[in-house]
Image (cartoon, rainbow, N blue to C red):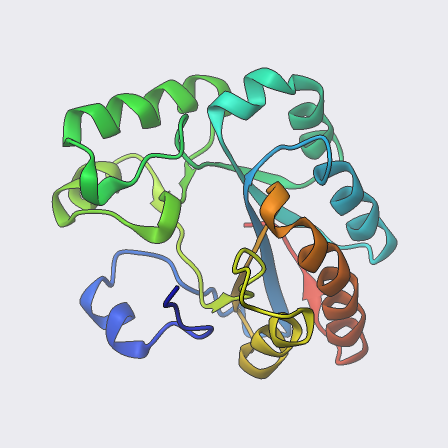
Length: 203
């Protein structure tokens, strides 16, 4: 499984309309979670965030929101931001445009957010052109690697701490395959960054 913990500058240059980081001129980072909400992980994440007075952004799947509507409401009630991650976790590279757009809109009918993150980070240029008319397309600056079976907890922690900077958008996952690493690494990252003077905001 190939990915880079820090998004290369050339990617940001090629796709300048996508959002990779937000420099607010202060020590702020943006923690994000993909692929939820899930009953086995999302409530624990919310407790951890509360403990550090941290706000985050959850990019949710429409299918899962319909399965767990109470969890989705809990995320919003606690002051976190929510974004569209499609309804069925579609891969833009292998999905026909109209099928992809219909899936995004089906999710939007439930989520009602102008934030969108493509599953796998995969979008065709034609999809970017269409979607950016309505959505802020939010990518990321730092990848934790919590989803990767070959990545240890320590490597996951290092991926974040070695690459984070002011304005970084950091990706974690509240999916089951990331649960063990994510629940170990998230509080450690929040603790260390808090001690370094960072604050955590939703997008």
